[in-house]
Image (cartoon, rainbow, N blue to C red; front, side, top):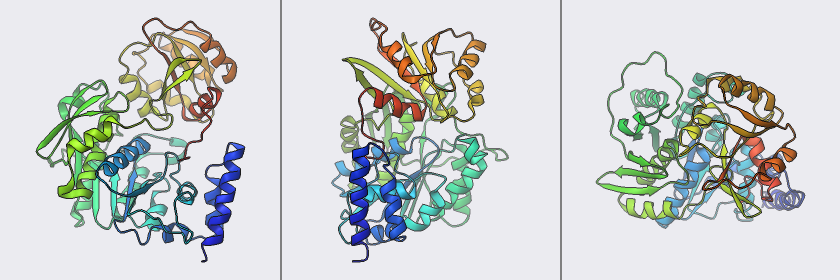
Length: 422
């Protein structure tokens, strides 16, 4: 009964936080203060164990995909909603699901884990299986260099008691696979075919691996062999299926292959690629990632740029030059200088530019010869100006925003749920 009262109090705090419209991770912080071993206790008796999904970009999307595929195969599982990927976030998401004694009721846990907190969470969650999707240049103010992320994610992989699945098309993870194999670990892979990668101007935008030579070819549990718009062709063993992606882009196709590869590993002979394809067809987009929102009945496609690779890959995935473009960057991007490495040739103008970093971005766009209609640092005023523009004929308004302003945009448009809420 030692977990009963911390859980009860955490659930009360969760209700109060939701009523106030904020603090989605705070209830988990309360529980962990009162019951420091809450995470360990919650997962320790799961019949099928714990799957951890981590990497620089695409964790939420890949987790969402994997969960959908496993559930389509009849697996009873718990997962943390997008964004709840640090210790208190995982604990908060558990509050909605655990029994009064603090145990997960389902057979399996599939958990997205922040790479920075990965070593700590891997130690506490003791995963049976680990899926790593990429290592990219991300949050240099936090991680400093990709090699540091490599060490963090290697620690997560080493914590797996059974399965390790890595992206063979990411040279850092391919090197990690060789390192783990040389230490006696069994490693499986997924990949994107060379021909598909060649059609992407910047590949998967993975961080460059210095000092490693050519890697030996490895077998993949799932391979992206074709891609047209938001439809990928994926091969898994003797099966090949068209997979409907939640949004356009080779990065979404790679995430789908990763989810399918891990599902094959977990399900064994029970796995069906046709069943997986059906699951993808019914899949909804993850909070703020490739969503289409509505404002007074007019659709707005939201493209989120969390870091240089996600910005570049999402720009590459555009299927047309946007007729109307809203761009928003604030202090959530502490150092916007990375934007000078971005290829903006796939846009020809910005109608409204906003956020506290608006003039930094305007300067970069000026160097690229891309005109900006209006710079309005106040986000609410800027959005009002953008929405007042007549609907583009034969097209959809597009909003290109960083993570923090994605959440602000959703709130201003009346989408009040928080990331991390189930």
